[in-house]
Image 1 (spheres, one colour):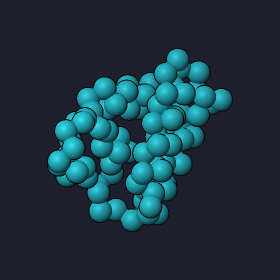
Image 2 (cartoon, rainbow, N blue to C red; image 1 turned 135 degrees about the vertical axis):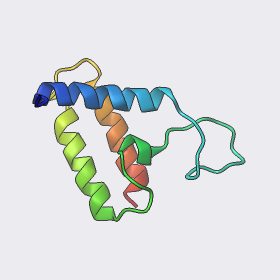
Image 3 (cartoon, helix red, strand yellow; image 1 turned 180 degrees about the vertical axis):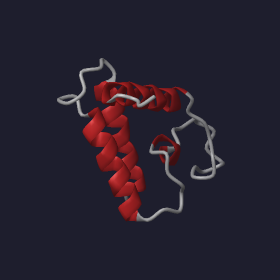
Image 4 (cartoon, rainbow, N blue to C red; image 1 turned 180 degrees about the horizontal axis):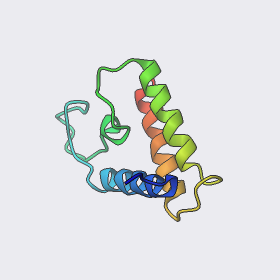
Length: 92
């Protein structure tokens, strides 16, 4: 069965909220700092060694799906801000 655009938007919002709710430490974070954090690469669903172009394309894809003007889900604005922050940290 083909997933509708609204279903894919809802699924993406749930994934982003889930990642943000389960902040942890990983290889991208200073191991001496014990504060939990969000792995932006996981949030964007990309590998840590991809090119800037791949990161930019993934950000634009998610930004179009999550922008509050285009997505009326109550958590769309939060998810959009998370994706924007992820891009800022991973986008060089």
